[in-house]
Length: 77
Image 1 (tube, rainbow, N blue to C red):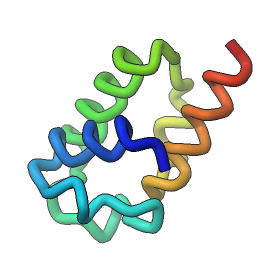
Image 2 (image 1 turned 90 degrees about the vertical axis):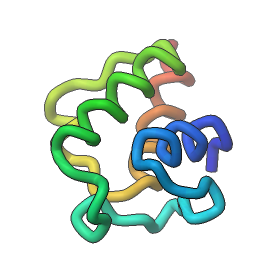
Image 3 (image 1 turned 180 degrees about the vertical axis):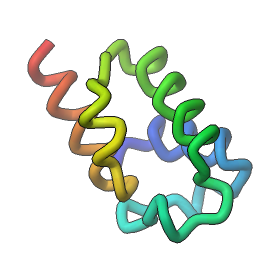
């Protein structure tokens, strides 16, 4: 998993970076609400220079999916 992504997630969700794993589920995390999801997407788009579609943003269920989306966008660029 991308270390910078883990750091962004930890920062937005106010949690230790060591607790961020690819299997971390959006629905199962009390701090990963809709507002923090938008904050996270904004931080990802700024940090990685990618633009996620609304479909991609809504489809995210895990940290691993975010990591894969970023990798796909960075490879395509």
